[in-house]
Image (cartoon, rainbow, N blue to C red; front, top):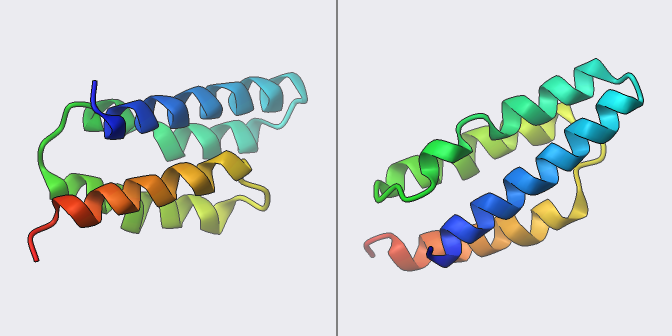
Amino acid sequence: MNRRDEIYCQILSTAILRIRTFGWSEHAELCAIEADHVHNIPSLIGESNEALHAYYLKAERVGYLSRVANPDASYAELWAELEAIGMKASPS
């Protein structure tokens, strides 16, 4: 598994824990926001199409951030790594 795939797995793991916490706290809307954020990530694991990875960062991540007040801080670190990987993979 490459580093990008590992990052996606970490994002999924974080989201699942957040969904569980929100569920036990009876915050259904926050559960839905988290689930919506990560529902396409499994299809990105092992994906070679750089445009799909860029779409996650430019559209899905931005949409998520517009809907949630307190994203898990570890997402920022993981997103920064994904951006760095994307820059290396994108043709100049």
